Amino acid sequence: MKTQRIILPFIYSLVGGLVVYFGVQYFNPQTTQVVTVKEETPSRLAVFSTETGQAADFSFAAEKTVHAVVHVKTVSMVEQEGYSFGNPFFDYFFGPRFHMEPQPVTGMGSGVIISNDGYIITNNHVVDKANEIEVTLNDNRKFKAKIVGTDPSTDLAVIKIDAENLPFIPFGNSEELKIGEWVLAVGNPFNLTSTVTAGIVSAKARNINILADQNPIESFIQTDAAVNPGNSGGALVNLKGELVGINTAIASRTGSFAGYSFAVPTSIAQKVAMDILEFGEVQRAMLGVRISNVNNETMEKYNIKELKGVVIVGVEEEGAAAEAGIKEGDVILEINGIQVNTMNQLQEQISKYRPKDKVEVVINRDGKRKPFQATLRNMRGGFETVNTKSLLEPLGAEFGEVDEKLLGSLGIRGGIQVTKLNDGKLKDGGIKQGFIITRFDKEKVNSIDDLKQILKRVKGAVLVEGVYPNGVVAYYGIGL
Image (cartoon, rainbow, N blue to C red; front, top):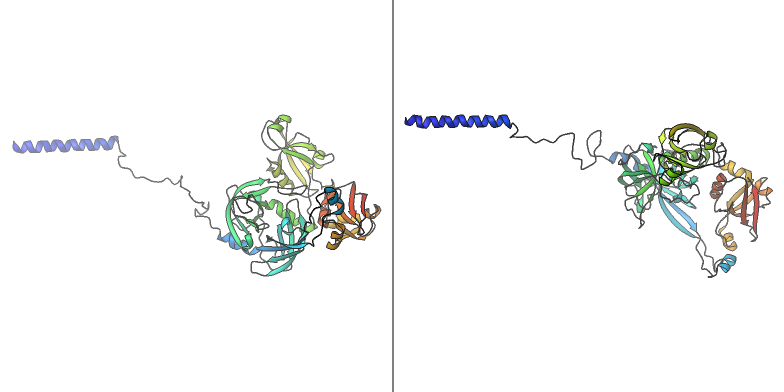
């Protein structure tokens, strides 16, 4: 009996425990869990390569490009201002109280070698009005450089040094850049040569209104790669080591980097450089329209239903657009298959072409997509390409810089002098040899490049203003 009283309760307890255990396992099988991290939702606190899953490595692109970015030093002669009489009437007729001799001013910047025989692309503002240009390579070799051509509309220039077998950076496709993609800025900030900084593409097709040219083309790549004074004209490259932009400007209240830098995309820079090398001038193509961004105002005015594209607010007579059948109120959606949603994007696309090139323009008209083919024209309305010789040849003259002492004695700040006069427009208009042109078609002329830029735009009757070495001021009307 005693044994039964001990064994039976034990058996009952054992059976009950087993029942409870198996019951719990049956009704709640996940009492014990193994915690795992799902691979499809990784934590990404750093940027990884999509190919390898490893952290991005900038060393390949840096090594491939740093030797092809040069330091550019310029010396310009800048005239110093004199004191005023304090009376605008006296200032106008008698000039300042005294004239100081022009003083040399040193400038610094960067440049990118684009060919093994010494052609270098940089910013126009780096070499503008430079009397001397010195280029220092990454191996510390120094060369004198000369300007091959400039384009104030895009703030780009090409210079040349006499050297062979140089490292250079191949052009990449800036249109393939994506927002958030890594890029490197290579240049010489604050005279610190061969400096590489990294950042991402923050935005594309930015217009920051920094170009003073009459026909500026601004469609900048915005990055947060550190760019400072001295970086202008340097390289913006992708991780393949390809050139995707020319660093040009920063947004800052102090003059030093504050988180925003801007580069001319190679979609523009490559075409500008190739035009300068082939023609000596940029072949600017024109669609012949005045445009505006699509916004609430233009949508209401032109009865536009969709916030997309660039609206045409004016069409030039006998221009490329008018000839193709494009009208005011049409909305441009695409140029050769590439979407355009801002004025900057449209300017960037058209700037890739030359006069006489044909482009397909997709238009939104009355809510329907319609394709048109337009043959682009030059800035004077024709189809021919232009070059330095063809621009100056009709004038029938040769030009030179004005002696600084002569400028001072005449009380003028700039101009170009007619050094030789042949048969042509200037002679027909009555201009004599030695005449100093200070304004052409009411625009200031301080260099032969200034005159070329004006000649690209004007046609018909123009006014030529200037002064002779004896102080006689003269005005002439000529026809182009």
